[in-house]
Amino acid sequence: MTRDILAWRSRDASKAPPLLKYRSSYSFILGTVSIAVFTDIFLYGIIVPVIPFALTTRVGVAEADVQHWVSVLIAVYGAALLGASPICGYVADHTSSRRLPLLIGLLALLGSTLLLCLGTTLALLIIGRLLQGFSAAVVWTVGLALLADTVDHEMIGQAMGYVSMSMSVAVLVAPLLGGVVYARAGYYSVFFMAFGLIVLDIILRVVLVEKKIAKQWVPAEPETSPPSPSKTLSEKATGPQTTMDQPEHTPSTASAPESSAPPLTIFPTKRQLPPVFTLLGSRRLLAALFCSLIQSTLLTAWDAVLPLYVHRLFGWGSTGGGLIFLPLILPSFVAPLIGYWSDKRGPRVPTTLGFLLAVPFLVAMRAVNHGGIDQIVLLCALLSCLGVALSMAMTPLLAEITYIINVKEKSHPGVFGRRGAYATAYGLFNTAFAGGMLVGPIWGGFVTQGSGWKTMGWTLAVLALVGAGVAALLIGGWVGRKSAMEVEAVDGGSDGRKEEGEV
Image (cartoon, rainbow, N blue to C red; front, side, top):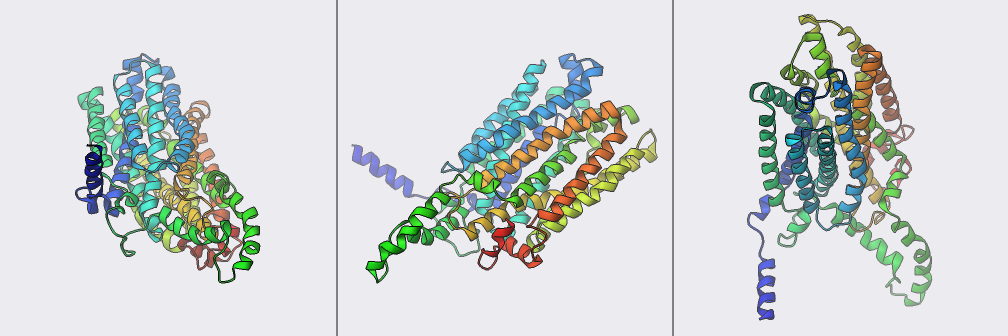
């Protein structure tokens, strides 16, 4: 009986899942990750124009304290994202599947949405935002690592451009729909949209089949579909590991013990270091993380300020508070083109230009200081230009994480172990981005409340200038290196040895 059951299970396991080719395809995985990011950001942003009014009508917060609690609720999300991201990255790089952590993150997102929908106290709203931040940590860390596993390295910038665009669409649509639906249909209707999107996300994440899982049934394809980085890493590491960790099998057997002794005492200890220490030892990665923190701060500082500012200045309600984000996000649709530029020429120039372009527009925000149509037009124009600048900075930074991993792997095969370090690296990126999401609302909200709108604008401009300086010097490698090396670092270079100094 037992033999029959085992035989049946063996036959069942050998049968490929239905529609495997499509469920494990690059397009489907890219679409699933993009929708996961869209869902996460949509549920983050849908309450941005709603929560100032919900705090007074549902929770009973005094009008004078609304700005404070709006900033706190937005910052709590960033704090949860900050704390959970490195943990999620470590766990994802030590599990056999990316899909399971993604499903766990989705359950957390469902729980957070229920709390935000039904909660009538500050404590429940804060817990809901904490769960939402944890879910975002899973999506951004594991989802981007899954994408890096799937996408051909020469196309990673374009792929991250599509992810960035889906994020931008969510940031655009969420406040808009949140404000309009709240004004027309009430508080609960806002969350009905959220639950529908979660159902779609659940279906996609359950259906998805990872490339490395699909290879059990599908023979290795020629390079038309992207290789798994973990497999690539394993292939790169196999040669050096057998010669470094074991006696060499050469025609001269007498010389084998002598030639194998030194590597036994040197190389294994290097490879056994946790990937996070190797990554944090890279000044290029640290620069990318710092620039990500700055970009996130510049982006999220407006979440706590814009809805209330346009309410005071123009008398707009929740609908206007959502619509005002439209000009800030629309320019982000060029993100795939920026990613293509980054793939071809390196991330330094677009990132630096993005931060530099943001400076004059942030300073010019001081001119928006009274009501009137001309002021509305000016504010929308400045936000549009700022959106272009921030998109130019964001997309290359997403791709830069993968560029750095690829260079490290090429120069030292096996340095990150058998499973690689994409999730760990994107966990660090997420931590930096979350730091900006924590700092941004506090910076925007409290500086505006304490020193005014004009002060917030020029202080953010100074921060953007700092980001431009760091990007010009270190993004894509140290600026003192030959420019050809930057291009080599993007596509892996010829032998991978030269680039290590700039990583």
